[in-house]
Image 1 (cartoon, rainbow, N blue to C red):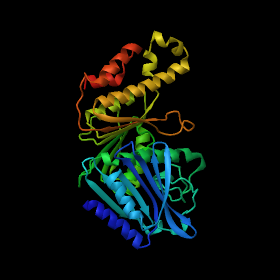
Image 2: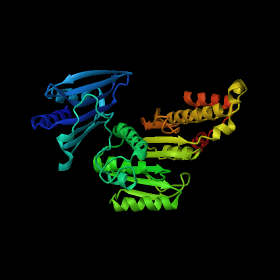
Image 3: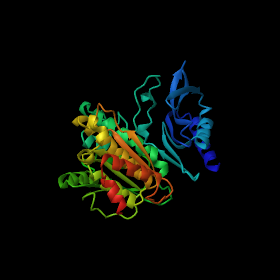
Length: 396
């Protein structure tokens, strides 16, 4: 419990120094059947500063008010018993706590710039606006350069959906941090296949390196030479030495050895499959994939039993897309990944709203006779489909 004692001392120091805790999020639950997430924020109650805790159990949210003196013990107990990840922001500090599955605790504390700690901007109301990972009212260099923010930090109205998408993506990144290697002096290697204009690639680097101090090396890969040149120029302009952009094809890229995390966002059709197969071959610890344009199975799928459904083109297209991603998720499971399919962003903002998140379990090797493989074989036979990812994994 030495590390937890250290956490308690840090939190007590904040309280004793009258440093207001602006927000706390505890996530990555040890048992998903119990508390799933805990959020804490400051509120004013009859001129007294207290903290409101909101915990989520299933689909229900429960609330409890805490005094500032209670806060350290509540958070220490939450991390010791219920969660593997905590992010805290105070007036003058940012604190991250990660607990690995083996019980190793990593505590990272970063002092904020003096300009960041302005208490007159804290909203203590019960119904304040949503708090994003990237600030809404402070200029973030790459967001300004890419036209999402104005130079004074305001979100450009036409780009607000993009701002929300970036922050939603960073929430997924935040949730997988405990699953990445945490050895001291170890550089995390991340590859982003099909990075395009690289809004999310820059966001990933900024969040991990600039905001949280991780030692990382990120490679963004895309076929568009002019886009890659612009992105690299921007990375150079901001001094992002650990961020490199290269022209290359997903299927043929072999310029990496050890890879910890693979990101593939909106890689069209089977390009997603080639990226996923590469991630499996590299034994990547984490995979984040938002598929796009799942045409392959739409061309293949045929089933007499489903003929009344498949005769409608739009229904067939959507059904084929969902089956494609479900098959991908199951194939990753068969390779030893704990896989989830999650909503990336609301359908009203983009139809490409499914994110596949896969986290390596314990280096489990592929076995053709597993239950998952048998189930997929029956599905392939029923629908007369031959998914590219299946073929790539069979020949890896």
